Amino acid sequence: MTQLRRRFEVTDDSGFLALVDHHAYDGFVDKQWTYDTLFAHFRAAMAQRSLLLWGTGREGFWTVDVVVGEPAPQAGFRRTSGPIQVTSGQLHVLNYESLTMAAQFADVRLPEPYMRDLVLELPTGSYGCEIVQLDDPDGDIDDESERERPHFLVTLTAGQQPEPWSQPAWHDD
Image (cartoon, rainbow, N blue to C red; front, side):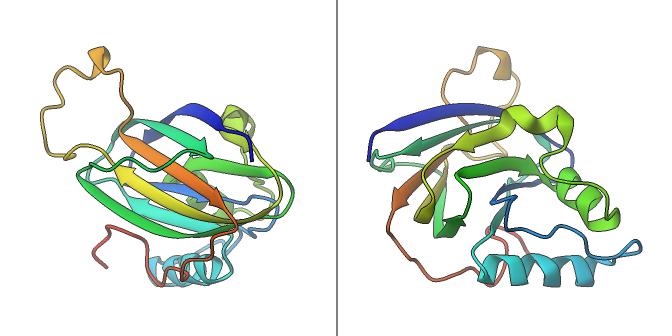
């Protein structure tokens, strides 16, 4: 597979980011979903390999680099890995707010129009996904405007099948 690298800038008002196969993920839960029904929905989607959801450690504006065909970095504040299935040649990097809009309103489709630039094109197939948060989210955030390296590095490796997640990574229930 050829190498691919894309940088995404993602807002986050809730402390979660996600990678989703929006062609396979059915976002609607219920007009009056609860925390329990929503997270049960997320767990089912993670078991089906259409969603990976992780905690960021705080709210913020995150830089996420997604790479295919490169090794994951050796160092980082924390790391996790899980499986994702690409069914139609695209994955979407998004925030919890978009997931909750899709969960509440049956007519909301992902990606939402203002987030279409957060879609990555890549070959259909199974991928192992390693997510590395490079720095402690509680560290110095005063000079984020000067930041060149990403907050998160998401490395996709074709053909890998790690065990599905049963809970969002880095999230205390």
